[in-house]
Amino acid sequence: MATPAKRPHLLFFPFPVQGHVTPAFQLASLLHRFHGFDVTFVHTDYNRRRVLRARGADALAGSPGFRFVAVPDGLPASDEVAAQDMAALLLSLPALVPHFKELVLSDELLAASTASCCLVSDVVPVQRAAKEIGLPCVTFWTSSANSFMACCQFPQLAAKGLVPLKDTEQLKNGYLESTVVDWVPGMPKMRLKDFPSFIRTTDPDDAIFAMAASIAESHRTVPSAVIFHTLDELESQVLRAMSAILPPIYAIGPLPLLLRQAAGDDDPAFVDASGSTSLSKENRACLDWLDGKRAKSVLFASFGSIVKLTDEQLVELAWGLANSGHDFLWVIRSDQQQKQPVLPPEFLAETEGRGCVTSWCPQQAVLRHGAVGAFLTHCGWNSMLESLSAGVPLLCWPGGADQQTNSWLACTEWRLGVEIGEDPRREEVELAIRQVMGGDVGEQLRRSATEWKEKAALATRPGGSSSVNLERLVNEVLTPLM
Ligand code: UDX
Image (cartoon, rainbow, N blue to C red; front, top):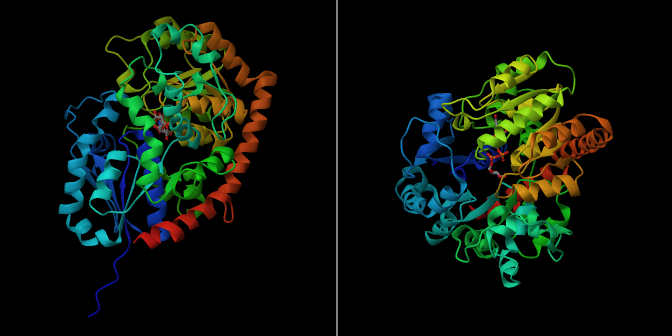
């Protein structure tokens, strides 16, 4: 009897944070369901425990040809939903390498298929380890191409003496705002303020700065291709500039729209299930609450899975929301909620009926809901793409990492949002909410948002840029590698 032909196998290993796990899962689902790849999707133990708590064992059961595995990460097996700290996570990545190697070499399925297997990852130490053991790999960069390009400039910023900062005073005295960087290919009119927050260090040996600074070099030599979760139309200049310095690049996104497009209307359950792999329990009741609201009357406020506001910022934001007079849906994650409530009882009393606070919502469905008029966001890349896909304008309050660059893009390049200051008082929040929810500014933003929504829809239809790039990725890179 002939042995059945081996199916090509993709090993997905995303950086273990919601904003990276979600798009990796979306891409894995697309390639599995519509392009004939088997998938092994790697969680860290910590995230695996979170999925089990939030969604039960079914969420990790997989399906024929798609399975989940987990590797140890050394994080405590606490039942608490601990805040994830971006810096600590970045520094802990090398510890995953031995577990990754052990997985590839000892796992029966992977060991049997290494000849027809490819790693898809944004974890550089894991990619290097793959190269060492002869496993081909491609990068899936889950944030903006602009943030990648900005990190590529770190060595030059340091060589020109612009960073590291001389002292922490420079964070307050306007140095970041007034220092213009006009030589970045494809990124005109940048200020130091718009670079990823990893430049905001006074330590010349800062490990995270060094990690970001080495991005260009490691991507020139290790992966066979770089996939960006974006669309050509959105970041065309920088994508063009980047093709000169990287292996072949493919702009493929927004992935939730590509999934929807590929599945058609026939299979909403599949689209829902592959749209996100939530690490937290969703409260779907907020969709019913939105049903009772007028079109575009609600401000949605949510800050992703990592950014943590201080108690003072929470209170200022609360009063800004209350005083704006607009209805709002506000996600305050469980790890952000204290044992002692921070929100003043007067705020809760004043906003009863027009405010809904929840710890985690089905964000994509919320943004698609007609009652949502604008999105107050930390500018995580998935949040930005989800808002753009739904045609919802942005009120940008970047926290850290790539978010400063994403906010700059949305406000100056796409004209999709306005930015509020780093530590806004309640009056500033109130004014900004009024601006984006109504008036001339709001009107202009809504017009741009509608245009971007149409461009994103076009890019993901058959023949659109992202659909074509996906086909090219499969035919030019993934299939030949295996
Ligand atoms: C992280 C980084 O912080 C971010 O800067 C980077 O761009 C991506 O990785 P995160 O903070 O989690 O991401 O933000 P984001 O990229 O916006 O991803 C959050 C995801 O969680 C989104 O897909 C969003 O839809 C989802 N989410 C968020 C929910 O499903 N429900 C919520 O209540 C909040």
